[in-house]
Image 1 (cartoon, rainbow, N blue to C red):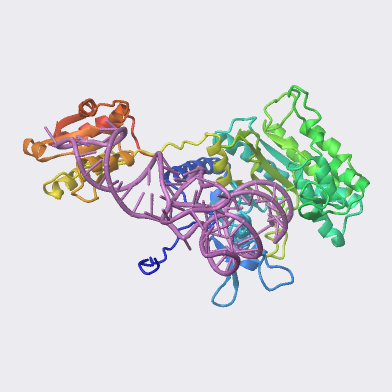
Image 2: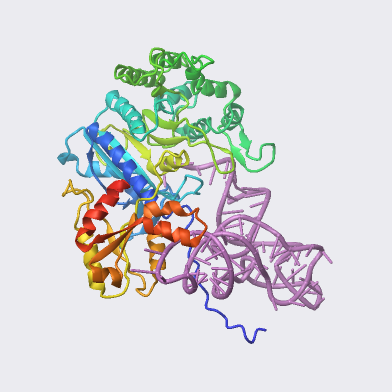
Length: 533
RNA sequence: GCAGUUGUAGCUCAGUUGGUUAGAGCGCCGGUCUGUGGAUCCGGAGGUCGGUGGUUCGAGACCACCCAACUGUACCA
């Protein structure tokens, strides 16, 4: 049989690299709408736009591995012509720090700016986790005031609500790096020699929302097997704390400080100032107290503006929560995180947790790396892609496709006449009472002109067109045009008899004089409330 | 990286103890129906059975290794 097998040429398999996504019209318009809403809020807070490129010299991103002559594997990197390492940005904060440092003299400080853009991470992707995704940041550079931090938190809350997430279904949690640093110092984990262990502790605490407390405690102590029992799966080495130390850390990062004052029925509210007082008593340590002072200042500011959470204000928006850690090393003070509280099920009925859809914090060291002077800064970032995935799953995003264009069918004769109809439509407004408003979207059927009307209708149907324009030789001779209402016609699919079906279809179609084309299309669009965008 | 699960058409899946030319539904393309979306009916394209090697007279099925995806875990600046 091998003698007649023609050995087909190897087809190249079309495939999308994992962790990346193609985006269709619905996703694009949803993103556009989200970005618009976020932008409106950020601008209301006084931020101005600025954009930086998608790549930077790797050293500016601070991602060179300390001892090796190459960047961290988590960033996409390559050599420039002159042998310099260049990397795709993995967030918008480090590039902003470079921009500010480079244009320091020309910027009015405090410099307040926003930007949206794609960032890239070379990590294992998962549901809702991509290797390219969009973030939308706002940053205040040059202010050390807790008011700048408090504002970020309030703006985060406003943004969530602008995106249609009702109060109570999201929460902005706030903590301070100094709190945990102080606690760790008080149990003997201070100093440079313990930096590695401190990081391990941070990572363990960051998992409080993923594992039960006992598992986290293993991570703080000797370590943990991810197979669930001794010797199963992979072993994660712990921070090596003893029981007392682990208990102290867990106490200082416990959500019990917050949740403890909620009544069983959910009433009673939360008092951020109480939380800070309790937190302060965790240890007698200078750094801890400094952190608590900053948290208290934020709590007061948030309170004064009505964003706080107290017994008199059941609408929890901003909560002081000691369990918030955040993975980034560059944070130096307050850190915050926006979490969606809604729970949904995926297709298989399993509960899905969206977790953090945004976050930020104070990064006083990032700009000053480029300059000899301290430059305090704080910022907030929304994970647009992740939030969009969450909102889509929650059905909170408008995913219905945009209407397609009016399709002018080609049905014998000169094509020029059809093209003129298309041009007339395109040059006319959707709404005749608003001549400067959006214009009618229209196109000529550009497929094979020999295609039957049926095929052209099928095309218009797939394009989700509101109507099709038909002019055959009969109409041409009479100076008439047929306008077929595809939206009205769409409701006829239950008819089984073909003759009956066609008769009803004909009723959804009107014949008009050539000169009335535009006006009649405008009427049809108005009748179905088609407005594009 | 580690562990588990899974790889058959674009999608969802059949495929007997190893036995001729690997199938179905849906989808797609074309045609039928005076010159009109759906339904109908007819026809068509589309498969390295994830890959390589092995066992066998014979492998989609059995064995080994590899690859990929999924889930968990680690990492996530």
